[in-house]
Image (tube, rainbow over all chains, first blue to last red):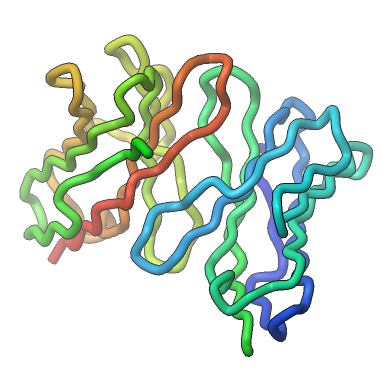
Length: 112
Length: 114
């Protein structure tokens, strides 16, 4: 019940395309859902996050869509660029000082 | 912009040896974490630390592991007797207060146990 299931495992899109990465969870106590971007050899960097009281959050080219009833959330990258090529992790957390539970990651390749 | 720093960036050690991984969290942060990532796998929680004590730990964080905040800036992870399966990237993370959810990760230490 603590798991966060992420798909797809890898994704290749053309420059300008809109990759979509999906995550699903079971634990309804989760109340914070961040996405992290990780480049090879680097630590995960917080990209964007959402709380379950909103259905969508947009920051620049990155958008999180959140469906509370379906217990799913997704990351959309508008006008994707080769520099967006990285591994993306969704995560979830119960409020308080609880640790993040990460999905398995999606390796995104944006080709020119 | 303040960031979490970690040293060393790469540590190679022999099985059975003790290693200490060091982290300097962001200065006004109060909650500290260690995570690890085995090559090609997801990031896994090890331990969280607040107010000079462990808040929570995972099943991975057994008696071979310990954490310490030896002074006002450093946060360390010690593995007493390393095993081959301890080879991974170890990430330190920190966050500000109970009102802030964002955890900021350091660049990691790659631990290789031979």
